[in-house]
Length: 158
Image (tube, rainbow, N blue to C red; front, top):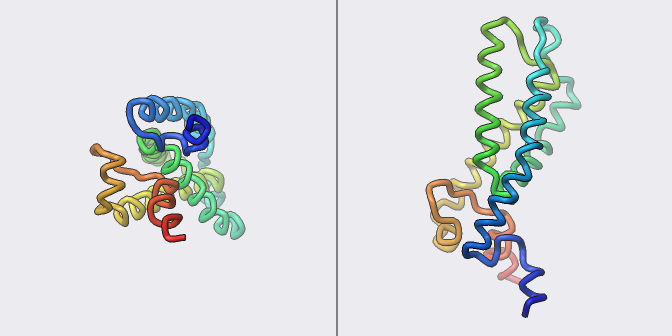
């Protein structure tokens, strides 16, 4: 019985222990997003000519955005992600007033985060009326995990 419980996905057991685990996981991602933001703050240039992304980088925005979508939804770190995104947006607007523009690296990261936000919004809209997932993820911020969706809807069909 105990071995089966340990094999479960983190947070799948529910209850107060799952909430503690979720907040611990969120805290583990704070340095990651802080470093991303510090890196992003150095991605500004005064020259507009350097602010275009090369073609291969454009192709990598989709996989990067998909990776961040999975990280945000499965890790249940939406609040941390959205704070980082808005901090990045505020920095872009502040630097624009100083006539500094994002370089290709900054554009890549900002585009990846924008795509991630769009994917999370689509994911939440798609699963908004799912009664089982709404019960599993109560509260104002509703971001269901892909693993929970898979175990509930996909694996049960086999």
